Length: 503
Length: 125
Image (tube, rainbow over all chains, first blue to last red; front, side, top):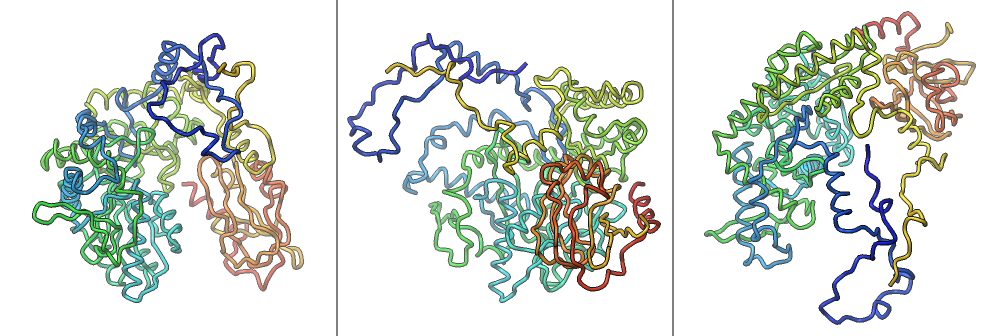
């Protein structure tokens, strides 16, 4: 069952909302606002009593699926539990009540936190400096490519191509294209890792950078990373690290030591700040010394214990985000790093890898494993056999898992595996949770043989059942092209349910 | 159709005099699944062989469309905007995508029926 909108629940008999009187005398709106900005009538706000509106929101909250309640086996998008201590730190008035225009002298604590977080991230990924501004991973990719381009321009080079592997996250080619680069694809070899021969054939004096995720999106460590780095650098190009999979080896090895020149990190993945609808995100970018002059302004500097925001950076690519990034996320990530400590972070990565390998082993007789293990923090299985023999696709398995109280894993990515199912359990899940997930998948695979139609009809116990995704996509596209008035994508007030509030 | 030629990237082309018709293959549509959106070029644009000319989107994936041959676009199948499902139901007929005025000779890497069958068998494994 779904929940009506508050407007649909509105009852005319309820008194309109009463707002407190303003505490300051101000001019009449008609004296200061242009005529066309003035309302002719009061807004049609919903009329509900306090218990009614409270229950409305509580019911909607109960329809949510969240990491606080259940397991998210989402691959390639580390969905970590968000520790409550992070929220306690972010809510401290000295952080939560700051205004971004406050004088530097009055925000020394906040600047100190940014400075210390930068030091910690530098140590974790092995770079010289980090910008905390980017608001998400893709934003970090774009920021790094702008810096690489500015650096190469400063040396009189105009390199026009960016290489991405065929297993890359879709944001990699998108960020490169948005930065004005031509994108060339590098093929994976049979072992799921980047083909050195194909890489060599695509590298040229036009190559600006290779964007690489390690471990890659198949959950496999790029073992030849040192050779890859040498090849890329020998043509004068740079190596960019997509940090989506950093959770596989925190405190064990460092992208900077592998030869990466620019590294982004997702605080909302690896460093436990809220993710997805719970965002906003944060995608800091770390760079080696030669790229430091090009980092976005301002940077936090510390001299004799005094912190300042340095805007005098003549070679900087400029600001990439208003103010100083999503500061609340920086507080949460720093809290996580401090509460874990260095040993704790490397233990987290080891546990994440162990969880993934345990689950992979549990499921290897039920789903195909297209690449040899062991894997890193995630693995990719394939439902290709079930599709051929029973007509059950990865999508059906994902939907059926919803009825078994699990979030759906990533499906159909990476594109190099047919009917891909990508699972990343993370370090926080217990053996019991992993076992119950494996049991659910086994149960679905068994049902595929005995009752495939039953699977096509699932989920049946979610607030909304199986959607016709094809019809939805076609109808929305027809609407966007102006070919159809249907579906209605914008809610409109029904006159009889929203009376004019009496003033 | 015997004179239909194919590419490794799953486009087909037929030629009648100076006029070529192109689309995507039955294998391609079956791999993509239900097509929900096509982004297509305008008539008059000149395409080089293997140039990207549009995007085909299914619920599973969005893929680039490549020109199997060089030429100037003389017609675009407008029906595909409102009925992208024609690609699934009739990829070699009503689901045609572009008509081109041929520029120069056909590329020599086009495949015949037997050659294309080998490509699909290899990728189906």
